[in-house]
Length: 174
Image 1 (tube, rainbow, N blue to C red):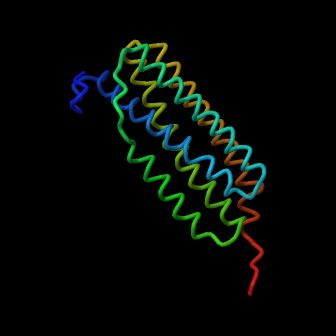
Image 2 (image 1 turned 135 degrees about the vertical axis):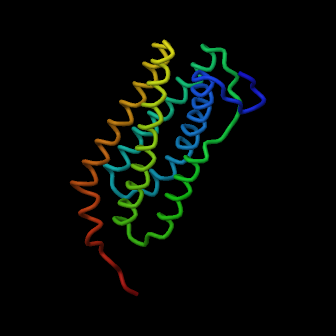
């Protein structure tokens, strides 16, 4: 693959292009999560977000390891989709005046990111399997499983705590 142009001629080229973008997405998410952990009011939400930060760090390390293993130049690129999700989440939480509503907003934004990542990792695993790259497919599958675990935790937290608290926030009048 030509590392100076975005030409994609094969499924392997597409996979390599995508995992460069995945690395960017994981780095962007990893950098945003500490701020979001600080914004969260719920201790349970903070705990899940910390776990998500740990997964993002682990995924990033594994992606960087794959660059070395596959002898891929890890050109710097950005993931515009992830950046848009992060920007959208930051904008919405900046409008929230109540902690419980902010938690619901934050959780919803993170689940959008999470669903995007489930999709990209699942697709990458399918591409790698089709190319006979079982080790790479296993790494992507593991990342997909991690994302699904976080999604389950966030869904349970939303259904049993966060959304219920956000329904009736305590509004302080001046």
